[in-house]
Image (cartoon, rainbow, N blue to C red; front, side, top):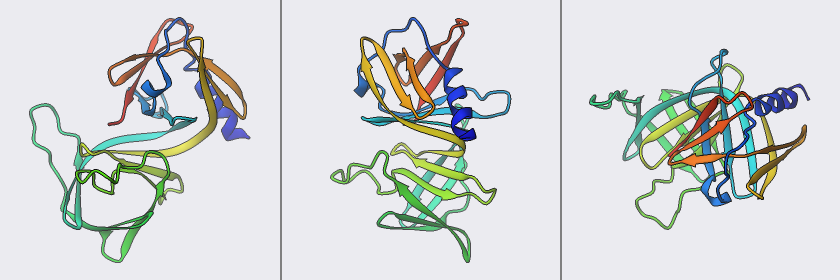
Length: 208
């Protein structure tokens, strides 16, 4: 109950006003606040065709490259700088299980999240693309998202809430357990702009 209440309050802080909403298919995806709050946490909206999951947690972005049965990770490069990757490590995928052996004898085992599955009919989409979850050693659930572009996002979840939504009369209404939230949103490319009652716009960037 406490987690739901904190999440509800976090969502309320991002309520919008006076912004035209787009069609539902325009907002499907993973949207993360462009900047962290004073506690260094991000707000994330995971929007599927039927539900919205709101997550508050620690967010980090990086890159990955795959060569055969090895995967290498590295930071997001600065403009004009090459991608710097760590030493490749073995990985394997068996159905809904992803195993990454960063340290010999101590593999990380992740389970696929049924969120946005890769198009298996496309030969150019690697089966690692999508979302995977595991329990981080600090005791928090973590989600790793692999994009076809080589982008990698890690979200360590502090709290979350899930609810169905509908778009009607330019209003997006999400029915969380703690109560419904009605918002208006504006999309500009890969950014959702949210303007609250104080008139200050907040920006959510799409993961892709």
